[in-house]
Image 1: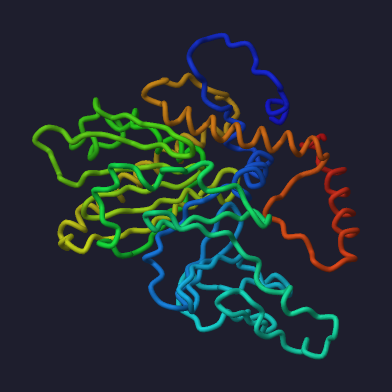
Image 2: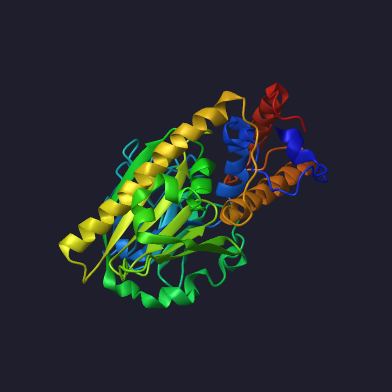
Length: 401
């Protein structure tokens, strides 16, 4: 698989028809680990909306490709992000999905932190002269709140990550989004599904409606699929489709996908945020947050909520079935339609560019690069870290530097 990444030039094309990424990219653990390093460790990830955090101490826990973190509103009204890791012995600081706290308390050895992440108490460390309270605060996660109050995080351990605008400039100022006043929506509920497929299998599926006439009878009955199109820019894929004549809903449905793994579907009565969360090379957790418009009646809200949940369930079944064959070792790749699968091709190019570039940097350095890793402040540990790195690399038969 990594030989493909190492090619400096593309192999001569045998056809003008674009091809999908190889099936190995959808099942190999080494590729999943590379994606964790190249994408999920250092790209801006859309996770929620600020309106979910109304009170001081409100928190929500999240996962992204094995990285656990949480967001919390502090006493100044700021939304802070932290890795869900106690600085003492790595026990999770937050053990519930959401809640409200006055202080962030680890239930292992009793270390506690303020809502800004500063260490407040470390029992029995008071008399240790060499212990530095200030350098033992929670590991911070970069947080960005955009023009529409959507909340993004970046797990990069560097003080300054890549600017949000590098990938998403203008994403929060799409003219069609002016139809929606975000102050009119409030968080209603979260729900999830688990799928036996690679996260990219679902993202590919999301970014085309070529399958809608066959696999989504609800969409086919109400949408004029001949009008469906996508527009791509930076890290976003905007989806457009009109209602069938005589089926006008007035919902002004406006879906946008945000690389690498999230989407927001706006309507006049409801919006939902979807995150496609990798849990292994071949499993995914689908995480959803649902927000209700203040003018939506119970009947309207339930109808649209059930409609979208039905569509998501249908997509889960499609992806579970496709992944079985991606895992089997028979199928390698297939032809893609440059118009009907424009979004798929765009996403796959973004993903390929990200992992290939990161792989080149690792080859240059002769080691794996984990941007989310926090360098130990104390001296005397780097020798042990490098010892293990050398041991792991010498026994890893998949990666040859």
